[in-house]
Length: 356
Image (cartoon, rainbow, N blue to C red):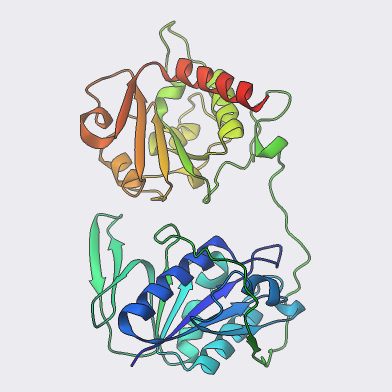
């Protein structure tokens, strides 16, 4: 019989589990129920009491490592913590969110325990065995993996399961002792890009590099294509106006920003650019494949690279002047045949008025 361990960790505040951790809890509960397997949930946090209150109090054994050493991500302490949790749980299957904190240590922990690991898992199926699904070749080929070797570590991509939600509880937590190695790394703090009001556009209307535009937990993905910097009906380019409209929409809606490869590459071609857009925003065949509840594509021609990047968006909409573009012909759920400059300007005015 399988024994399942779900590894979770607290967010930056230390008082709550991350959304990705709660998604892993959902996946683990479903798998344990289907296989009739024992379930353990492990927590890495400076104080596990508050994060544990969001977890089911009767469905699983709760174990945790606590202390100031685990308040910040660090390879040495996180790897030691997860190793201790795995040994305490004696798990044959270990599920963990594919967060930056766990992604960098999971392979090392699996090696210490003589296990194997697979990453970017999107689904766990199989009626009597474990079948893990993931995508290859730029999200174009889906594979189903099975392994007999144990322990088997599986890193779950975020956005593939609903986060666990239940009433607050006061579960019993078993604290696991950890033998920490000598710590040579000291976390002195975090440095993040400068932010305007709610990470929106600068107050002076300028297009400053470094404004936060990538928001993995946002409900909407806003994708900008190269059309924003091309000549408009008046024969001129309006990159400055385009940038202000886009930043204004991100500020008002809280959406995350994506870009086509043709747009993010323009900076090296001597063409008008949006300075806040980098290759980190790139989606598609050579970029990211985000998972948001809704998506709005603007000024994108909708060919295959863009379609690949959008395939996991639940509800897809687009703004295009061409009724025969790739998005219009079956790639989007709704298409608005209109000028993106005018539509986004109207949307910004509406959202600002509603906030006021």
